[in-house]
Image (cartoon, rainbow, N blue to C red; front, side, top):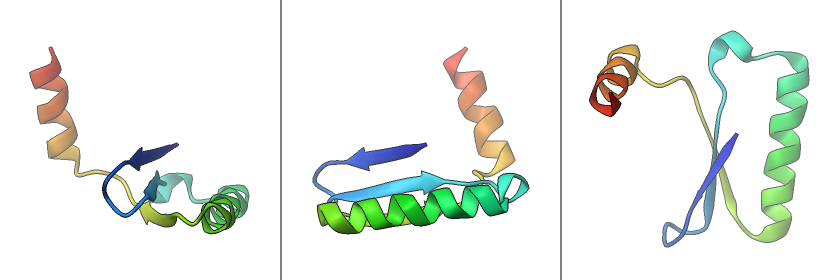
Length: 62
């Protein structure tokens, strides 16, 4: 999954929690990075969000 935020130096942020870090996921991340390089975008890989933050956002969302 990726997120592209305009106005922030054309960056794509990928999210890969450590529990899903497999060899196949690594190949996918490298492919995403290569595609971003070709488009002239920056690729940033993030880990899992903080569990407390996720619970708070879910509670706020109803």
